[in-house]
Image (cartoon, rainbow, N blue to C red; front, top):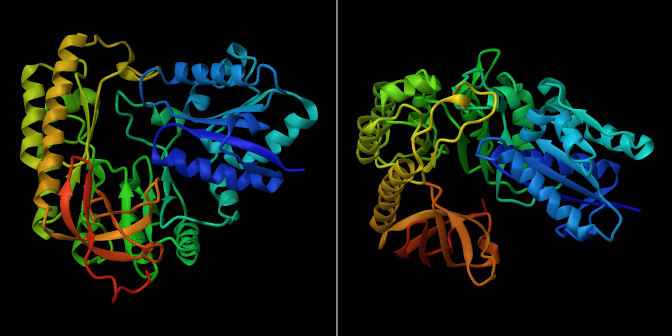
Length: 442
């Protein structure tokens, strides 16, 4: 008799990728995915430690699960991900409802860990860093793919040690998967209907395996005829090497949106953050890419009110946003992470922090609004991914990752179609398909 597992995922695209691979793995020991808490024999929470109060969110979530199962048989409760890595044994001590704690580099051990618990009822934490064995194991597991656009992790961990970031402690040192593993997975995805691949890594553009770099991977994946679009995230400005920039000259499938987190527009703050790049470096990369293709757009991440940020530093960030005109960017008020260098620094007062965040977000949102407004009455290429939730329209994304909603058919899914944009808002374009009669199946 099969068991049912409910998986809830917090955080980044890599956690989403990991959750899918966890599901692929536990299917081998009889677990099937359920969308309902109450039907689960196993509840797994895949956690993220990047934002504030991540640990407390885990315990809050467990509290909700305890209420649901108050009068039912308790499910096997597993905490996975970066909070699991950071807290490990402490979670088992603090919350008896938790049975197993598994870090991001131990997912290849999850089946043995579950079976051992079922047999011996012994609580356990698995948080050893072992990326090599993990990816060797996961690369052998193949399951059905049902998406047009898919993530593919190529690199994990970080050696940068930015003073605000927990990734080096929760994901370990930088590790790049062998290119043969990645290309095999890319081919498998293509053969199973995937038309767009997003290459993932904590520092994806630091990818390097025996001289094989991200630029080589992109050009190799481009040879797969069924793959129509290639993206990558998240990058570090320090690793935007010339060979990667040159890819934008010769690749037909790399998309013209560069997500390159800058974090601050002030060199002083970048130094305090230990970012190891300057605004001059950043703008040099921006100008090089714009010279190659004027249609390339930038998105970024911003940490507002980092300790030591003065009015001029804030103004420098605002001026950078006005200069580059980022689209689809993320911005947050600094919150200290346990175990990082910035954990005990003096915080900027909340009133100033929120005022600065509001100004930054208004500028970023205005950039998005104007960019989308400029596309009205023009035709954009859209990769059709699915129907909207109410099934009345089709949904896809432009080359710049903007959501596009239009009238389409089931047969359009997986194709690149031409859509004339009639209206827009900050996050979405709306339009009508122009002519799909000559489009080939992607």
